[in-house]
Length: 114
Image (tube, rainbow, N blue to C red; front, side, top):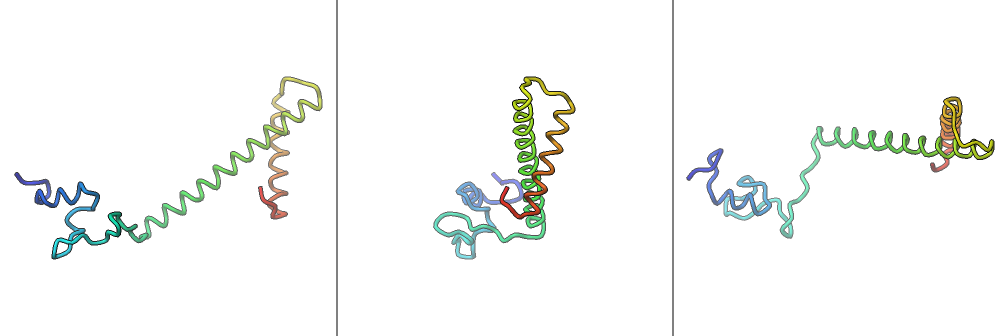
């Protein structure tokens, strides 16, 4: 019985054993691009590099947002504790966010680790 795309059953066996299929086999049937039974990483092409840069920017922005939220939360907690209150107003939230932005901006200007 034929395989989709005209691949032989032997090619399907090579594919299921962890190789990329018939393209991995050399003329003598030896597996190409495999070292110690593991596939070698393919070289990055332009699209892969672009996706890696996009992912890196996303991770940096996500870390920055998390850092901002944590600092804002800590500042809000400290403000309420100093004033002896248990409930925050919208003004308190906005003030804590503004202070957090200023503190983080100052840390970045100084080059301090954040």
